Image 1 (cartoon, rainbow, N blue to C red):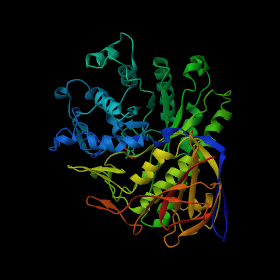
Image 2: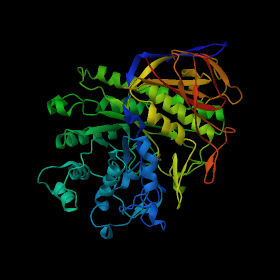
Image 3: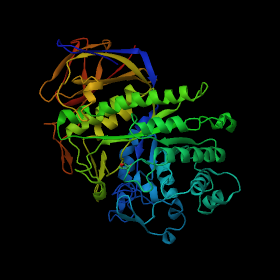
Length: 509
Ligand code: AHR
């Protein structure tokens, strides 16, 4: 996207035939961790007294129904920080025999009533693909290989047979496996130095790809623009001597995971914060290239991409993890999430997968109660992007004045422009153009000259509310989605209301 600061009427010109990157729909993936009420009471609720809400597997039917139109491509599981002490074999076999264990990441007791086979069954019900995160804390390579064999094994081997014995004759074909989670964090059981992590990750990656060359491995990065990211990419991307593994096992590392949560009580800091993620993606993409250059890796069939497998608005002091992290989202947060999603679309070339953290109850767009569900404010941009922003990112020219106040982190405006309108645009395979415009201004509607729209009727989807602090709670849902039409042949300007998200859609000729 090209942006110029302009004090005249804002303008947005979309170039639907100028495709900039193909969008991997995996950028709209989800995340379900054994944390708070995400699994128990969220996607799995067998003891709910309202029997009609729960199916024969104990899954919440209303959650599955709500997720259906989003067609979420992948769900990450079982954590997060939870992974660092999780032994997957505790969660298979007859439920009555499964051990309850102390859970150290969030201070709970883990019953292990929901485990690998239940998650795979849920993925089938949700029509989605699983992405599993390995225990790099107290886990061993043996255990990790056994999990891959249990999920994907087709031969007459112990763990493949154990899966069959547990009632699952067909392999689950789990493609995505993460080499640990946030191993750099002081909160992590068995926190590691970058040197120790990189040395271990390479050995695990080699063994896992020898066991099953079909797996895609995700390296544990940090925020994208850090020394940890540089070091781990440099040492793990494709260390010398590994070319003998065979082409089908290369690159050794398929994606590099980064995480970022943004939040501020100040609206403008809140909505501009996701631009820090945009710069982090740009820097991290450069680090991937740097590792390729410094390691003299010959042209890879597949350049590794970024897996932004935890992103969202989250303020831990406001919604502590130990208390289930149930954020109550505002309209301001919905705008921030729309900016986050614009970032992922603009950076589609570099991002192979992204997972909103998380998908139910824990820092989530979707909440359950004993009697039903609530769509939080951030649900609406997430739904619109999942449904419409697919195919290719297309070029956009934006001329607009910029916000010039404080940002969080404060370096955002040192490295990014912060126009009042934040924009991304796509064209799908059927020729539908979708443009998402966030007007972050709290006081000014923005009459904007729209270019590249043509003269056919445009569908308009608007998300706004009475003020930036509006929320959605049971019985009082203040922020929703309104649909209307706009006829650009009658007026080539469009007014983006203050503090709103607008998606415009038309069929290109
Ligand atoms: O998503 C909540 C937690 O945030 C995850 O468990 C952890 O990876 C991150 O710190």
